[in-house]
Structure formats: structure tokens, C-alpha cells
Amino acid sequence: MNALIEKFKQYGPLSDEIEYELLKKIKNQTRPKGDFFLKQGQIITCLFMLETGLVRSYYTIEDREVNSWFGFENIILGSITPLFQQRPSSENIQFLEPSTIHYIESSDLEALYRKYTEMNTIGRLIAEECCKFLEERVNSLQTQSAEKRYHALLSFQPDAVQRISLGHIASYLGIKQETLSRIRKK
Amino acid sequence: MNALIEKFKQYGPLSDEIEYELLKKIKNQTRPKGDFFLKQGQIITCLFMLETGLVRSYYTIEDREVNSWFGFENIILGSITPLFQQRPSSENIQFLEPSTIHYIESSDLEALYRKYTEMNTIGRLIAEECCKFLEERVNSLQTQSAEKRYHALLSFQPDAVQRISLGHIASYLGIKQETLSRIRKK
DNA sequence: TAACGATTTTGACTTTTGTCAAAAAAACAA
DNA sequence: TTGTTTTTTTGACAAAAGTCAAAATCGTTA
Image 1 (cartoon, chains in turn cyan, green, brown, blue):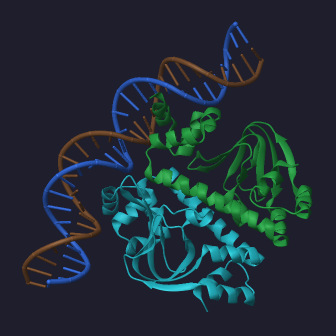
Image 2 (image 1 turned 90 degrees about the vertical axis):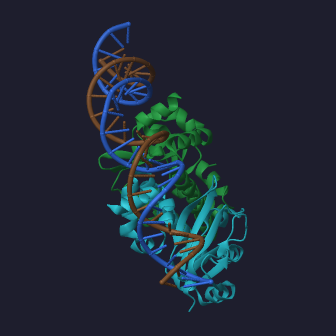
Image 3 (image 1 turned 120 degrees about the horizontal axis):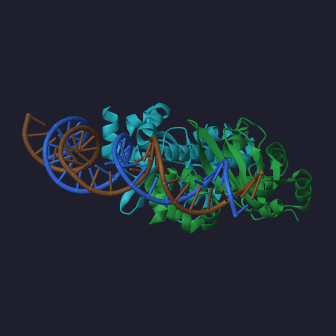
């Protein structure tokens, strides 16, 4: 069974008919480290899931890269702005480790949304989950010091700190890597 | 025509039947300044819209209030965490000006989601719009200095700065009000 | 193993933001 | 209007985080 379909089912039931249609639309790829899944300016958008590997999403601001999120195994991922707006992405999605992914293009997904209520519900629940994640991130950036944000990340996503370079983590936390290095030394 | 239904229609078409059902469920209230729409710990949640007035949503952390958002006229509002999770809210929603609101309880909304695809689509689009808003807020907190965040707010929501007290604005921006006062003096 | 490049750490210093206390200004009510 | 309360501003100082440059460490590959 496809892992992305498996994942969808965690949000709600899917009839055999939808499952069959999904199977036709879901694509699979294996990509090397450093490769881009999406580059800034592209319009093609997808909802995807990693079977193995690691990705980061980042955008560029004043010549420096800012990491907006990291994607691990078995989490539904997508680039929010272009996915929900059908506009050119300002984000880049890059594999940080060799990765195997399952994905569905948003045009195919939209068609399924129109055809099946169940799929629409799942889409809504995914968007709502995304809201919750972002809300927590806002709270963290709004109220916590760099040190507390780092320790929160350590306890909630210990694997992130293990697998991702210090510079990328610092950017994600909104601090300089020198600062993070000093925090970590303690 | 009810202003909340009008608003829903901006996201997608609604049949007369749904509109009729919505009309039966949508409640209206007029509330004085300082009143609470939702208090921390309550489970009842709603999607609501202000016809007139102003609200803030805040939570308490280490004995201080942190504003998470402000609500103005004609914007769809809801407390994200409890609305999408059906768990007790950690948020308080308070009117900052005398307000007239239209709202629908989330249990009623869920029932409509189950019954009508169109309503589900609208719910999904609202959640997606919420994601976009939160994503921008994360970017701002992650990459911009207090001064730039304030100026961004000034240009995107000039009315907020007009109508909301300096202390509330500072909390929303994640800075101390003394700092905001100094930024503003320039 | 040696050498290269990338990543991380360190040091000295600057800038930004926070803290605490008090004064000034504004808003509100008797 | 006159007090009273709330909000905003100011000052002196402390802490947090950024900047820039250089050194150290790590991983990879020739």
C-alpha cells in the first residue's frame, strides 16, 4: 500500500474508488542529497511525503537563506504559499539527505477535492493541522528567547538537531549560527 | 443578508439550501468593550465575524498576557487551537471596542461540513488562508528586527496601530512596550 | 595519509532589546 | 472641572543577540 494513501487515511476514511484514483495520480521519486524538489519561481506544486530522507524548505531574503521548515519521514509536506494560492513559489525545497518521496500534484488534488467530499475533508484537516503547527511556531518566536527556542526544538524534535547542520537549525530558529553555537556550548 | 454568509460566499458558492441552514445556525450578539467572547478553559468554539468593533485574542504565559491576533470588521475569525482540536482553549478572546458579531458554533459547522461538500471546501479555504497569514507572521518574527516588524504592521494594518493601544501592539510584535515607544519616537 | 573544503567554534566588540523605576501624558469618571 | 486610573514616555543600566575575523574541527577525497 502506498505510504501517502496510508497517511491520508489517518485523517479520514477513503473509499476504494478514491484510493484507486489516488494510486493513479501519486508519483514516486528517489532523489540524491542536494537536489531540488521545487525551485523558487516554479508554479507546479504538490503535497508530498517522504518515505525516507530529509528535506528543508527555504527562501531567500537580502541574499541570505532562511529555512522555513524541515521535513522528515512520514509527515505530510507541502509548500504553503504556492500550494494554497497557485502562485509562483518564493520557496525552495531541497533534499538534505538522499530521499524517497511520494507526491501528488495540486492540480490532481484539486480535482479530487471537487469530486469527493471525503478527500475535501482530509484536505481541510491537513490545512488545519498546518495552522496548529504554525501557530505554535509563532508563539515560540513571539515569546521565547533564542535559548528557550533551541531547547524546545531539542525536546520536541531531537532528531532534527541530530541530523541537520547547526547553520540550518540556527536559521530556522531565527538566530545567527554563532549564537546557536554559544548556546549549545552551555 | 447575513454578513457571515456573505463572507462565506467569497470563498465559494453556496446553494439556497445551505444558506437557509446556515441562517438557522448563525447567532448574533452585541457586546460591550472589555467583555469576553471566549475565556481560557472553555470548550465551546466558533467561527465568527465582526460586523463592527474590534477583538483581541491572547493567552497567558508566565503571568503576562501575549496577544496572538486582532480581529477587525469583515474578517473571518476563530480561535485556532480549540476550533481545530475540540480541546479546551488556552486563549482568551476579548472585545476591545463595543462589537456586533455573527458566529456559528463549531459543532454546527462540523455538521454542515459532513452534509455539504461546498461548505467543506469553504472550510478548507478558510484554514488555508489562515495558514498563509500565520506563515507570514512566522517569517516576520524569524527574520525581522522589532523596528521592521512595526513598520510592516504600520503599512499593512495602519488601522491596527490607530485603534489598538501601544502595549497590546508591542505584545503582538513580541517586544516590550518601552521598546515600541522608543521605536515610534523616531 | 595529506590536503581540501565545509562547518563549527572562539574572541573582541557593537547593536538591539529588555529591565526597573519614575515621570509625563492621556483617558475616564465623579 | 477635578481627581483618579491607565497608558505612554523617559532615563540609566543590564542582558541578549549580532557582527566580523580568525582559528579549530570535521568529513571527504585524492
